[in-house]
Length: 355
Image 1 (cartoon, rainbow, N blue to C red):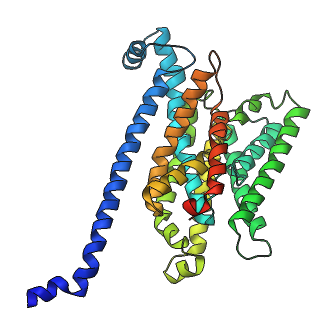
Image 2: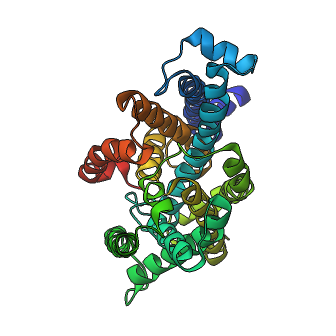
Image 3: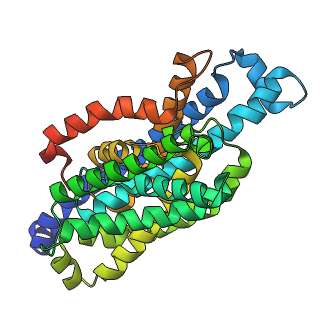
């Protein structure tokens, strides 16, 4: 009788069915992580193997593992390796920044580009170039941070003005409006004084072609700090998804989470924009795709986004190099072409993509 009660009691009836879905979900997430790592490895190899200068796989292999003065070795180590490293870094930065913004604002249509964060960083760099003659990533970096932070705060303040809380639609409208205004000012300045702003005209298109290892090493510590902060905030972001009041009742410090979230977005989006000039739609597409795979848990979303976004950036870069031969098409243009249809699909499937 005792044994029978144990098997049919409340604990057995509730706990047993719940454990199976959790194990199945964990296996799905783990297998998905393995799949993304494989995709990242393939994208990395493609970035090294294909480009505007056709090289055989044998030449690429020898040039990579036995560097010398040959043309293949020079192309691999001076052109393809640096842009591959930068692609991985900025891809992870944009992907995680997008996931953070979507979680903090509970807005499934948010990303650094749509909310004007990239435009704010770009405008600040343009001002720095015009007033102080900045050049290079190390010169752009602090202005990009300041512009990204100012744009993030400005969009949130505009979205909450007179309401207390901001709706997803209001934030998107505020971000698009701010991005249009700042982008217009940046373009105006570059047109009235082409010589002064010549260095940033191609930079503003969103490219990793003119970057080097030194650029990657300059921004890497800031991007790493932003990624660490995002991972540490992931548990609190799960609570914020339930609403500020409920999150506070669960012990989450909502204000502190938002402040550190904005700091992380500033480091990630500002640092990545300083290197690339801004690559749009990465932070929008990747968190959505990831959310469909792993569910609403921000810990998994942020980890997945950090690995999946570089796959998109490197793939877009390879497509731009191959399709644009003998020149190339900037990454920002390719991701925009891919991202516009995705944005339309997301708007039409709000229930499937909602937070």
